[in-house]
Length: 173
Image (tube, rainbow, N blue to C red; front, top):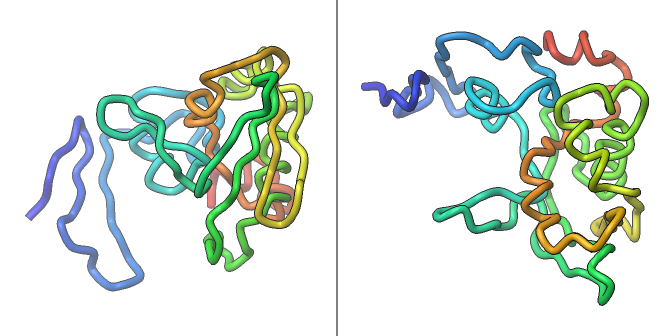
């Protein structure tokens, strides 16, 4: 049996413990580049393959994703995220604060700032820094009480694969 969700069909049970087959009407124009667009079909495809620091739960309430918890500085400009432990990427590389920082750094780079997500973050994020292996701090340009909601759109990629394959190569993997 299959379940249809807004143009997407999901098998109710994977064909094996390691395989999940998913059908979509069409792929996003950026294929596997999670920063090239928002909306449908992007959200269905990329949220299947990539995780975020925060996610939207029922009623639009921001909930932990890759972050276990977060706090904000008194000036409402530095958000400190404690990451879940034991999480790995598709290639076995561990999730750590350096991977989160690398994602935000790329989105602020010349190439990243031309993407839909990079453009959205340009007016929000000043910098990301590694506090320790499981803690990352993201500083906003102005006080931003809804920063965790803004980060729902930032899919975290494994920085080694992103760098080695390049954007187009990564998108085609």
